[in-house]
Image 1 (cartoon, rainbow, N blue to C red):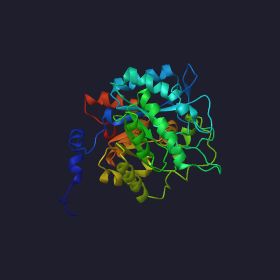
Image 2 (image 1 turned 90 degrees about the vertical axis):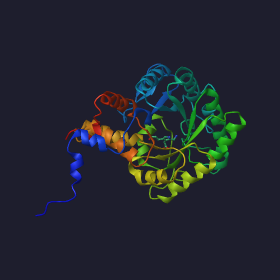
Image 3 (image 1 turned 135 degrees about the vertical axis):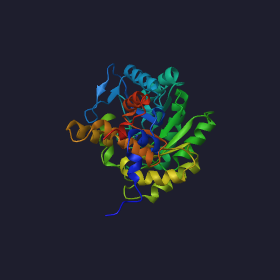
Image 4 (image 1 turned 120 degrees about the vertical axis):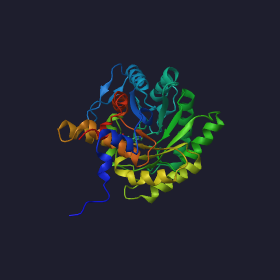
Amino acid sequence: MISPSRRPRRLRQSDAVRRQVREVRVHPNDLILPLFVREGVSEPIDISSMPGVQQHSLDSLRRAVDEAAGLGVGGVMLFGVPETRDAVGSGATDPNGILNVAAGVLADEFGDAIVVQTDLCLDEFTDHGHCGVLDAAGRVDNDATLERYDAMAIAQADAGAAMLGMSGMMDGQVASARAALDAAGHTDVAIVAYSAKYASAFYGPFREAVDSQLQGDRRTYQLDPANRREGMREALIDIDEGADVVMVKPAGSYLDVLADVAAESIVPVWAYQVSGEYAMIEAAAANGWIDRDRAIAESITSIRRAGADAVLTYYASELARTLNLQAGTGVSAAHGRV
Ligand code: PBG
């Protein structure tokens, strides 16, 4: 038996030492809360596959954003659930459409306290559920969709959104929307590009959350889960096109892509812990199979560790509350006393 000369355990001996040598931390400002707002309802509606998450009414949305802002959450990302849908997603560009109305209400009331961001994609608004408009053969028409995105960008910016989350994965969408925004005088409205967005099974519960009409899948526009290099390519293209932030999505199963992009990017890099990641934690915790609080903190800490500057997560307000409570003691739930 030898006495080891290198003893990494030395730095794990107490909570105080572990805190002192911790490499990454999560701060409430690093969290962005995705929220759903439904047209024509006066009460929020539960989403069964996402326990604790709701389709909000305008009123309950305001309360949720008020709470998030009070907790120091950095931003909200808004998704609209319209009453009616059509082939071109008219509700997305209608100033009276739910997403634009909600963005306006939030920007007026909370715009100084929290960053109001809107999802810029057609899938919630089309009757076929695709992220773009279709051509005569029923395929998603890239360039015709860009025109719709440009109009959406202007409608959302007019409403008061500060940052636009381009999640549609059309080629050229960032350059096109940037030019449209600038031409309309919205030079200060930022674009968050969902650059490396994979065709993922982990979006499952989101389909319920937005009452998605989708038949089929999104594999002609979202990335193949097997491709790592392509995630980087998409991020580099978006940065070149003028994206202010690039994103990797989902987060947990794509930490390699996230680390790649974080190593190269000259703009902030965000990651989205998506609906299925949330649902898995909730389901396992409900069965008593994992410690819910530790799983939440660990999953988000890991996304930060892989290189995300900020994380979109349905846990944003809850985690911010926990972090604020711990701020007094400095104890992190991810690495508590074990
Ligand atoms: C598309 C969009 C989706 C999500 C965010 N934006 C769905 C999809 O691409 O199929 C998924 C988010 C989640 O699952 O939490 N507008």
